[in-house]
Amino acid sequence: MVVGRLDIPPNAKGRPTMAHSLSEPFDVAIIGAGPVGLTIANYLGCMGVRALVIEQRETLIDYPRGVGMDDECLRSFQAIGLADAVAAHTIPGQKMRFLTMTGKTFALIDPRTREFGWPRRNSFIQPMIDAILFDGLKRFDGVRVEFGTELTAFEDESEDEEEGGRVRLTLATADGTRTVSVKWLVGCDGGRSAVRKSLGIEFDGITDATRWVVIDLSNDPVGLPDSYLHCVPSRPYVSIALPHGMRRLEFMVFGDETEEELCSPAGVAALLGRALPHPERACVLRSRVYTHNARLARVFGRGRVLIAGDAAHLMPVWQGQGYNSGIRDATNLAWKIALAVRGEASAGIVQSYETERREHAKAMIDLSVTAGRVFAPTNTAVAWVRDRIALALNAIPPVKRYFVQMRFKPMPRFTRGLVLAGADGRPAGRATGRLFPQPEVVTADGVTRRLDDVIGLKFAVLSWGCDPQVHLSEEMRRYWADMAAVPLLVVPQTQLHSYRGEVMPGTVLVGDAAGALHEWFAGQDSDGSIVLLRPDRVVAGIVHPQRLDSASRALRALIGGRFALAGAARRPVAGAEVKAGDVRVGMVA
Figure 1 (tube, rainbow, N blue to C red):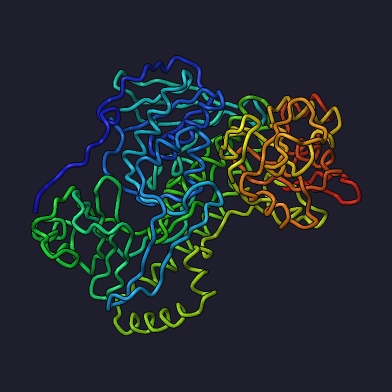
Figure 2: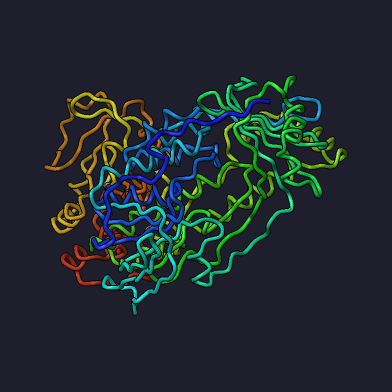
């Protein structure tokens, strides 16, 4: 058995030389330079917000943890301009096979859709992605990273949630104790989060007695391109192909087996012998024992102090959603904080972060726990019954498609939060509260681009077949212009250079490259043909063209901020309703 090493980009090693000064003013402090904290910092940098990242360690973590990345995650990295760099270190479209005790495939996950613009399943090496996220911060003069610095205390000095509130931090640095005052504090400091504990937030759930030993190998001795879960009761194990010739093997730990025993050269060799014909030839990078947890914070913050990622939720690895859930947190939270800091939204919109994210995080935890119970029983009789049932169900095409296309994965759907609702209090339209698809579109200069790249990190008012600005009053056109929202007119590609309808100044005309948006709007029936898209590409509302102005006013009142005050009398955020033609549009806070 050979001991190897993983080459991490040089800029991820050692203490970074990024210029910094704690005397500079910052709007947001982020505790933890893991993927969630770095992603939030990149979002804030893209939106012109000054951010300080505090990391207790002297460098980024250099060992792989998460290895599964989904399409929503890559779409988030696209929003901050880093997706192509990240994708270069992934294996896209990775299938996952579940094998019986005799080696037969009883379940297959192989989603082919690219609804959100990226492959649904991808493997990756986390330190390489963390390094890309870290390097991305060097684009922003207003973002700083302080390694070797510890948060020792903080105090929320805000008496309310208005824009003038501050949080005072006490930091221990190599040069002594320093204090920093910011408008928002976000704890991304992991499962043992000091921020969460300081807030006194309960971390509900269980620490599963199941442990797994993870062994990373270089010079992949298996070579198969996908992931395989060998559901063998005597010792279930997982084999995952990783980029750059790496392989991850994970074996269940039994009873009182210790990490010292399992991770010793003899222990590693014995485990590898279950998967390899010649374990002594394997090039082992590292081995560690992990314990599965299923935990969810009672709340995701208090006042101007929030928590995200593992600080807010932990889940078993079965669906590879721990990493992705953390990036969803970052994507949902960062733009809201940025708008509040810039005064373009009230501080109250940040409260919708917990409302929107906690329920979905719980759904992913529940799915992961259930998957573990189904796929890794240690009782041979139970495993035999599972195999027989699974093989029989696999012969039924609708059931097989349900698993192959990952339809079991809970998709985010916000029924409360920053979305428009009807008179019954439910989201107005089936698409409201859901992620909008990301097909390719053709711009006026003939370039084919992903939809999000045309919009940017902004609101959008997107319409099929007619200019949405035509259906807005001058007041609401001015409001959306002040918010830098993008009015987008989508037409069949055949009409891109021959469209005869009215196109007002500022409207972006694009062609529907493959007809995906045609199909999407056709599927909405009578819900409408214009969508109000948030910066995170969640549909805030879908409306009939002649109801766009009223819906825009409703969303403006929910967002708040200085532009809402300038254009209309301030309305209460919670429970406000406005008429939208003959249908009331309510705002769910």
